[in-house]
Length: 92
Image 1 (cartoon, rainbow, N blue to C red):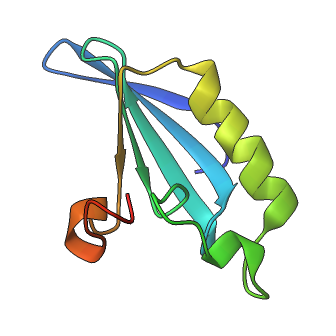
Image 2 (tube, one colour):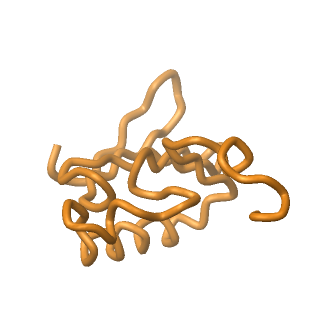
């Protein structure tokens, strides 16, 4: 998939947004407007690392973050561990 696509499943609109950024060249944002939730997978993490190292895509990651922000989602669900699994209250 190389362009934004809207699919309807049982009356629910789901927006699929192909992006680059994070760890791979072929990431996908999944936005559910009715729930105001966006699934970001590995393009957005509570502790950034990969986009800023050799295998990452810095410019594309910034564009992808813009796509996330544009949707103004109430909840952003990422694809990595929760902060509380890796860090204690002092670090957070």
